[in-house]
Figure 1 (cartoon, rainbow, N blue to C red):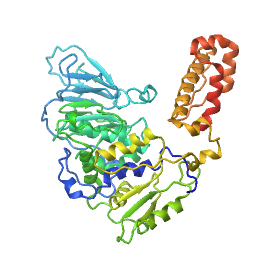
Figure 2: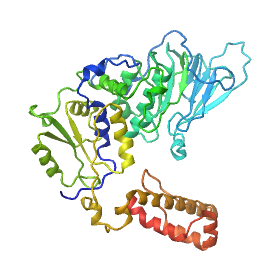
Figure 3: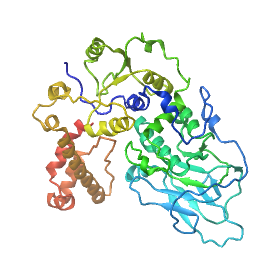
Figure 4: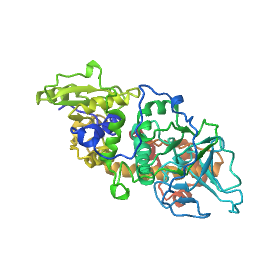
Length: 472
């Protein structure tokens, strides 16, 4: 077999969708109970059509089961690693201009002023990400602003900022926690979604799914100027961990199978049944979808034509699919939903397990992996096969992690000493440091001071700089 690229995150878009749609018996799935409201799905709903226009009367609903903190009706649970969650257990008013929710008190109330703040995004442990999430305030007083739009349903408030734009994160940090929260706090209840950073492209992309979760148009926390009233409010999303749904933690025992049924409700009933002609097949053999990546983006199957030929020889009708940012979800769903297998390239074991394997197996699907050997990786064209990056990629990542800590310490120390910011650019897997800045720090503090402050050898920082190219 020809050499093929070592993989990390190929076709996350389609892999993720595939594990929710590669199920042959859709009749069984349609019988599962999903606690969402039925809604019509117009062919191309835009953001304007999803803006909230309705006005209705009060009809209080039971409060979410959270432990009270102070004041009796504003409750916050901050005990979790992944998320915070707060609630107003009674009539609530939203002033979107100040991103503030008010507990509606009787005019004669003597309740003391209580203020809570929350960033409603379920990556609480990542400080640099959470800094970019809008903080929403919750107040018990002074008197709440006048209500301009009354809604006969509770509000569920969350942000789709953070890593939004990455398909995997849009589900891991968004729709899966949203599913968990709705089934935890609002089983068999109506709910209105109040969303921060609901950009136009995101609303268009997920309009079908949003309308399946809630029959109400969304409220855009960034652009709405109307004061809204709700029967209650919950702020934040519950997360069970990376790509995880624990049925035992949900009152209705909802699972990934139910989440897959939710997707089928949004995309699987006649919407986008007609695939482009290039994806049509004879129908006489089982269909295999081969995920394709091209160009210099990495994680490319360099012998794709050979893989396709071998798959056809063993009896598959092979469809080569190269998804893009503009690929409609209903089209991807229809393609995978009419297929029997999917093949693509990924990478690190733990990433593949978290991204795909765990959720696939939770739905009863077969997940098989093939680990390439050293000679099958194109990395041997760049590195000697005896180097750590080839022999033990996991150990190499640990090595890089230690260097990252060292580099961060050095850069922060330099910033303090020189009173001049030195950028340490951080992306998901890439860290860059300015080697000249390190040299300046060595000159100013001396190596002994560095060793004491950062517990690191200066040579390690240099090694990190040299290794950064591989991480990139």
